[in-house]
Length: 319
Length: 301
Image (cartoon, rainbow over all chains, first blue to last red; front, top):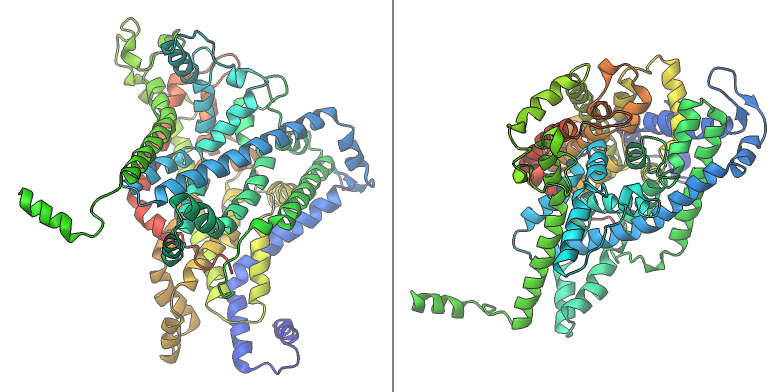
C-alpha cells in the first residue's frame, strides 16, 4: 500500500496530503480495483503483447521468435488482404453516414412531442433484440433475388406503375452485396437512436423558446439550436461507428459462410484476421494485422478529432 | 355538449393549430409509419417463413403469407416449431440453456464491477480520479481485435478454451461504456445524501450499498439489459472459445440448420422467432426503466 500513498503524494505536489485525501484515495482505489485489474490484465497487457508478437514468428505452440518487421511487410504483399481492406473501407464510408442520418433523423422526429412516442421508440429498438446470426440469416432470406420478399415488393410496386423490372441481385451480386449489409446496419440503429433521444431531451427548453422569440422557425431551431447541442453525441457515434465498421465480422461471415462470396465482395478485414489467427494459427502475422487495424483506427480517430471544430461543447462547468 | 367543449377550447391558450402545423404533423406520422412498417418487415418475414412448409419455400413469386397458395397449405405448419427443437444434435434447448447460464453470470459480473468503479469515479474525491476517468473513456475506443490474440493465448494457458469462462470472467472486471453510463447517473444524485450518511457515521461501502445503489436502479437495469443482450446475441466470442457442441450457444446453434447446399429455412426461422420473442417480451416490461436509465447529463464535461 506504500506505493499508493507515494503516488497520491506525487499527484498533488507542494501540498501536504491531508488524512482525508489519503483516506479518500485509498477508498477510491479500492472501489476501482476490479476495473484497474481489468484495465491492466484485459487491455494494457494484451495490447503490448500483441505488439511484441507482431514482430515474431509465432505459430501458437512454439516460443515467439523475433523476425523484425517481416509480418508487416507481408501484409502489403497480400492481394487478398488488399481486397478485404478495400471492401471494409467502402462499407465504412457507406454505413456510417447512413446510420447517423437515420438514427438522428428518427430521434429528431420523435423528440418533437410525438403522440405514440413509446410505441415508435420500441418499434425502432426491436431489431437490436434479434441475435446477429438470426438477423443475418433473415437478411439472406429476404434479399434472395428470386425467392425473397424485397424483390417481390420492388417488382410489384414497379408493376403498379406499368414497369416490368427485375430487382437487384442483392446478396447474390458483387455490386449490391455491400449496400445490402449497409441496409442491415441501418436496421439496427435503434440503440444509437435511443442515445440521441436521451441527448435531445437534455436540450434546454429556454434556449428553444429564446430562438422562437427571435423569430426562428422549426427548421432553424433544429439546425441552429438542437443539432449543435447534440454534436458531442454525434461525434461519439461517429467514432464508435468507425471502430465497429472497420471490425465488422459476424454479418458478412454468416452471410457468406465465412468465405466472402459472392466473388470476394464480402471479404472483410476482420474475417481474414480471424482466419490467420484461429484457422492457420499464424499469431505473429495476425497480431501484425491487428496492430495495423489499431493504427488505422487511431489515425482516423485523430483526423476526426482534429476536424471536430463542428463539435459544440456547452458552456457548462466541467465536472 | 357543444357549448362545454367550446368553453374548454377557449380556456386553453394554444387550442388551435395552424394548417402548417397540422400538415407537418401528418407528414411526421406518415414518415414514422412508413419507417415503422419497413422496420417490421423482417419480423413479419421471419414469422411467415417459419410457418411455411418446405415445398412453399421456393415458390415463385414468393408467398407473402403462408396460406396464399392452397396447394402447399394443406397441413398446419406450426410443426416447424417443435421440429426445430429436436432437429439439432444436441437438442436446441441445450444451446438455449447454455446461453442463459452465460448471460446470467455475465449480468452478475457487470452488476458487480461497473457500479463499484463508477462510484469510485464519481462519489469519492481523490487525486487520480480525473486521470483514471480519462483512461477509462479512451478504452471505449479500443478495438477488440488488438487485445484478442494475447487474451486467447492466456485463456489457452489457463485451460479455459472450450469452456464458457472466457465469455464470463472479463465481465467481472469492468466495461468502460457501463462505467461511463453509471457514472453519469451517479453524478445526478445529490452529494448531500452522501454527506448526511457520512455525518451519521456510515462507512463508504454502506453508503454505496444502502444509499446510492437503491437510487440507481434504473441505470443498473439498463446495464443489466445491455449485458444480457450482448451475451444473448454474441456470435464471435462463442465461435472463438467454444469447441464441443454440448457447450454451444444459440448463435452457434442456429448454423446447424444450414448445410453445404441447402438450408432448412422453416426450422431456422422458427427457432429465430423462438430466441427473439422472449427478449422482445422482456424488453416490453423493462423499457420504461431502461429509458430513465440513460442519462447523458454532463456528457459535455
